[in-house]
Image 1 (tube, rainbow, N blue to C red):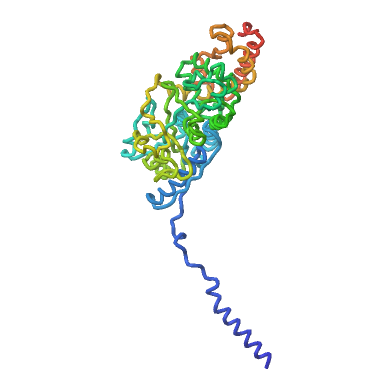
Image 2 (cartoon, rainbow, N blue to C red; image 1 turned 90 degrees about the horizontal axis):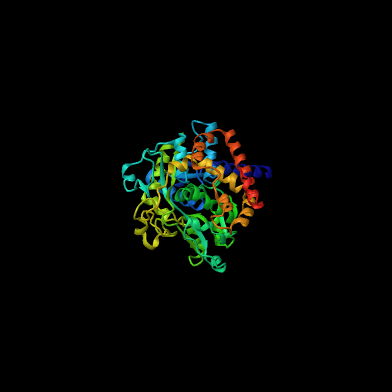
Length: 459
């Protein structure tokens, strides 16, 4: 009897378990989220800082849902500064000529895009005419976008001098107004600079000095400026940070880095000046790389960046409607009048379309000698920095007309030779290495001889 009851109970339990199995293991009903179209993805190579990457990722995700019917996420590839990103692109295309699995190059100045176009590494981007109509072709004589539509200015950059007002006041030093001020004797040890070989914005500042003053006077300023530099940092953004904390008193900076420090520390502590008539407003670009996996989608992203929606991200203060959420990007827009129309909501204090330069910047010349200038500045000045500083300490108080002073500030090569070498030797890795070694040795010899007083024996 007990066995029969036990068997009945077991069978009853099994019956209900079997009955419940379909309900226990059935798939849960699909949620609304799982019905969303699979998201697309763009790979972007960029030297831009985290704030720009995060704000554009967030904004384009939202824009693509509304305008494209599907969310698009951005994968950011960071290999360092602009110069390092260009080296990466060249190296990758040398191995994979058809394409490197990257859609866009976003960030870096005009010369970067002139080089990439010349090397055939950019794709033409067909944009609607109504999108380009409000954008001027040039600013201060410099193209904002390529007439052949291979690259576009995403925003504009100005190059100037950041300075710590408190430090200068304590040291009883004057506030700078022009590039030549960075070479003043009394600033020795208080100037900061990045390494142009690693930072495109730093390179651009040096090129501007050479063109604004002419090759010989420009090199003289750079030579003396280098004697005043405390150390050459790797990133261009280090100089504004070091200036803000008082590690240095002043240095070259791109506007966005300076304005960011001014917003954080206050304009009563930090100042920034664009040398009147001796600087340029340069487009900070964007382009589709050859063989981009998602060319059509890349064109949509560029359209967004150039549109008023995209331009407001650069300009508006964080938290303002249609602006950035977490970071002030503080970049000058490519749309005239936008800064003025936003009034106090703008994080940008300057209208790029107002200043008139005293010189005509030659972008082709800058692009042609980009690599050579990096090598020359790096080998002759930066790699010999300690010897240069020691020589400058001995020479800086001499009259400008003193032969020893003149020899210290003289360029190692005439500009004509620089341009000839730039057109040929830079394409030969072996020859380029020989030149770097030659310039480094010449720099060491020059600074040692000037310090010891044996400079008259120099070749």
